[in-house]
Length: 215
Image (cartoon, rainbow, N blue to C red; front, side, top):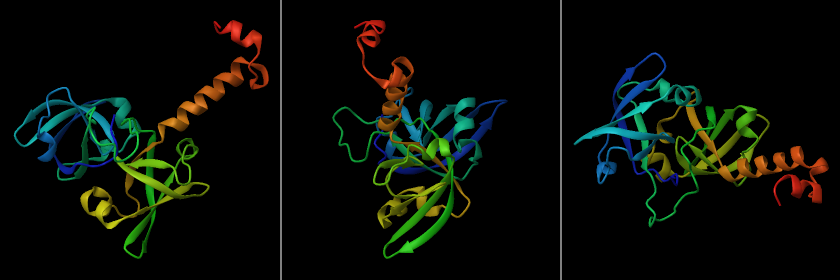
């Protein structure tokens, strides 16, 4: 599990592409402290496993499903990436619950300066947007942010200068793709409600429903 608080920005050293997968070589510094082969690292919000490491970075395999769901397939050598190690059990929970399992991608549709902050408007698919709630949490390229507004096909966040400076978000331009992970709690609630509707007529908890489900 991650928190959406980026530890550092790394850089893509090399990309080795296969038929349906890739191997990323990522240059890093701060996150290498204590990083072992097999540890989880969120790269632009995508949970990857460190397959090897050296004094200047690590490598990670990216499978077909991840390439389909995220923007990692667009990375080329020299691209900066957001990096966060998995949260330690005794660590400070500074963001929100981030699994590193991307729901889909979005596109930067608008940028607007607002005092010392910048509003980013992200256009995305209905399958992602249905879980985006105003004043709720969302991870954009692994960054824990608060949703400021939601429209029919897009949502907006307001980003403070510090976040823009220490993550790759400050380098994003109109039309750029971003990885999106919505709040996991909403997805679990929907799943439970759908189960209740499918298994109990009208969504009611009845004696027959409880009996059929082992109660």
